[in-house]
Length: 233
Length: 147
View 1: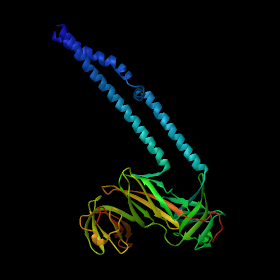
View 2 (view 1 turned 180 degrees about the vertical axis):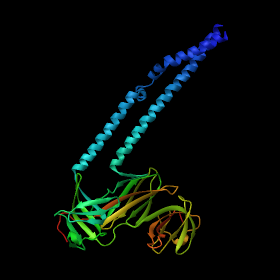
View 3 (view 1 turned 30 degrees about the vertical axis):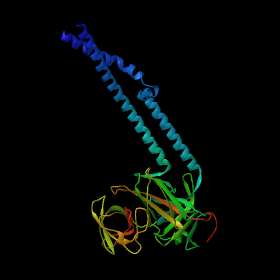
């Protein structure tokens, strides 16, 4: 008799799993059913992809058809009679020099032969589709590239008049940071504070410039701003 | 005896219902996850066409390689909620903080002509993410003959 009961139990289980699975799905609302159906899922994905593609296409079309002002900063890498190659913060750009391109150095028009390698320049013109037409290139013998910078967050280990040591959270190691009379100090609210209001173990953010010694290759970090992450009285 | 049969059938039905619901629920979750991932990926692709994204920093303004006439602009963007944002305009840093939604906005002064803006967002672990923008300040007509 027990065997009969077990047999009936297993039979009921089998029948229910095999037969009732689709009707259970059908009891859910239409939206959920659509999501569960692989064909509908694929269709929905296609629709979304198509919409995004159309938007991308519209954006690129409107951008490509518009004539927009474009300006960038670069350093002269190569010069030929017809083009100048600039290295920018992103990549090298070759700019064709036409009759309409004005080359300026120290408020005077110059010729392409007057340009030196490593001169810095601000290049301005119009971008139309994939074509950039330079109209003005203002050269400077001063380096226009920004200096290397550093940003770190950590706790103050020690401080004296010329430098302080900070334990960096990212690397868990100490950094020596130089300070000078240009270094600014502020608290969490942005209020200016004095250097002597800093104390050991206080959490700080430091931002400044990194200089590398040409001969020793030693790096010196100089703080431009120190922000204390608490309110200081 | 009949009671035992009836009980066996009822127990079987209840267990079967549980198993069926389990199978259905796992299938639905899998499909839902796939859909959500696709939408997130597409949104990510879409937003990257409109603004520069680097790690966890998105800059809405200023537009890279733009030419503007004013010597100031507002740097706006989005990053990790309440992250500290350090904006270097050329070599000078300004420290601000993103709000609870990760948005930040800070007005900065620019030099004439060349300006490289570097936006660093630093998280609690000290990891920082950087986005760079070039902005040229020039208030004369590009076609105008000056000098």
